[in-house]
Length: 419
Image 1 (cartoon, rainbow, N blue to C red):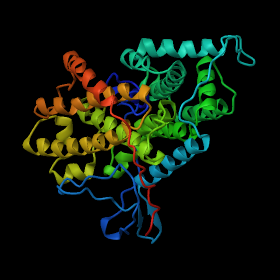
Image 2: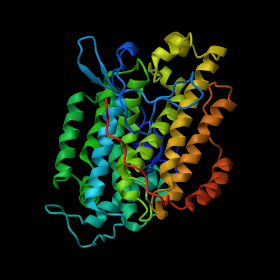
Image 3: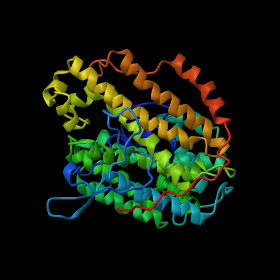
């Protein structure tokens, strides 16, 4: 689920790894919140990149109102606005930190208080875990500065460990209480009280880079969802799940990737684009793994949209490709591609050293959607994957895109919400 997002220049299922990066199964399931009846919506204007796509519209995509009234007349907030609030807080942290490039050395003899290992050994251990379990991701990080390499590996390892709580060998024994203990351990880590060597590396990373603890807590919340939820009533619920397990990873790593000093883009717009890439990757994971998830009794597709297409749970479990299924998949793929397009707007604004691996991740992961189409939308029994040859061909294109200069014209700040 979540860890996978950090995994792709460079890998792919729980494989999307770099900050802006991919999302794998671990980063994999999405945001959840309640979609309220259409008749009770109030119009709310706000600037946010991950808009819901109405497949019936071929022109400008609409922005759903983020506040509605429920049957009791109380204000209810949509998932997008909940997530946007987190984006604004993370962006504010970066602004306060007043950083564009970080140059911080790790002293080899810097021993962790109360421990027998040095900080360098802690980071080296994280690098080894990444090199062993996420080879393509690890190679992508080699393009970054040493400081960024260390930080990304520390974040990646924590995400992997979190994901494995519900997707690993002992997942059947994990309880909500175990996740509560993991969250308490996270709080200790942020307070400078790491539990082990791997925690120590992340504890140092979050002391050097402006990363909000809420992103890490939200990922844990995504793990809680996987313990209790196997259906999503609508895309609003699915979007929230995607944020929890994949969007969080993208937002965690942007402070490490860095925004180009010459960029005139707003910090919020860059973070919105990063979030869009996380959502796009997770939606792609979901569409690729429909059959695999169905065999586990799970359906990560909006049930209301399935019903509108004339499909039921049984159609998913039976795994038969029909015209109804093809039409449904075309709509879902269109939505995922919309998020990829939104993500492209922000990759160029990253620091030069971070652009190539992120562009490679985006281009490679998006090709999974092409492979689903090539398989005649049979994601029940066929696994859509990108061949090594296509991956290699994508790298020069990604490099070329990484050379594009950031925007040189200031962009307006996102508008505040007005009812």
